[in-house]
Amino acid sequence: MSDSTPIGAVTATLGEGYSTDLSVRAHAFRADEPLKDGGRDAGPTPVELLLASLASCTAITVRMYADRKEFPVREINAVAMRTDSGKGKLESVKVVLAVSGEVSDEQRQRILEVSKKCPVHQTLSAGVKIETVLED
Image 1 (cartoon, rainbow, N blue to C red):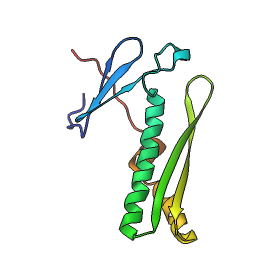
Image 2: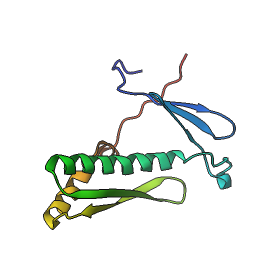
Image 3: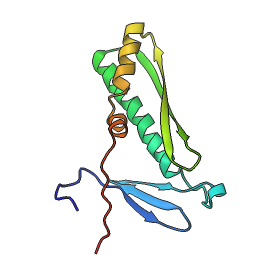
């Protein structure tokens, strides 16, 4: 295991079937698989949670930037959609970003550029090293 101190940790505890209880800091939520895949559909799938992370990070990043630049943005909506190979492998993701308000074309272009700077977008685009170890 790495000697570095983790910034944060999410705990996943498998329950009945594929239903997984997740906790991070003081928050608890659940992941599961759809009924057609043998789950109980008690929560989003792990890939859906990944897409939710990207969509929310994109919206938050845009909101922070718009607020800092005092752009007249009223509402931000980000939808992350997946495509896959048919074998369950995530092939690509498309984010559709909707921004409402009296925003100029120049501001809209800058918002699009900034949206790609969210940490989740950058991590997924660059790839990340993953190390899995068994606890003794």
